[in-house]
Image (tube, helix red, strand yellow):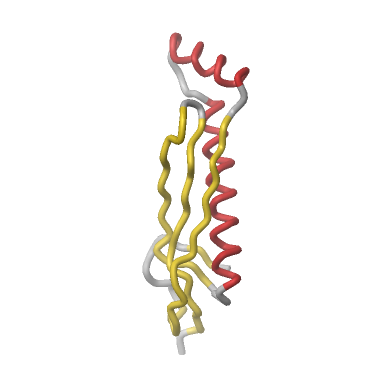
Length: 107
């Protein structure tokens, strides 16, 4: 599966648009990680607990988007975008979405 954030794929031709492929997840860290993050906001620096949480969430969302595209019979997903929203303190939803397409090699 080819995944790009552009509307074209070099060397490929889109022969059919199949529809919107999407995948999402809501991730939260446990209270111990939240306490560490609060302490880090006092002294400054990267909130690595949350950075890791969002990285894991992006990967899950991408995998679910790919699964959705595969169900449609897609070869690729173009125009991939991400959206995030806070659901509650310490948790976030990540949504990955794009256009599922069938492709062929350019002649």
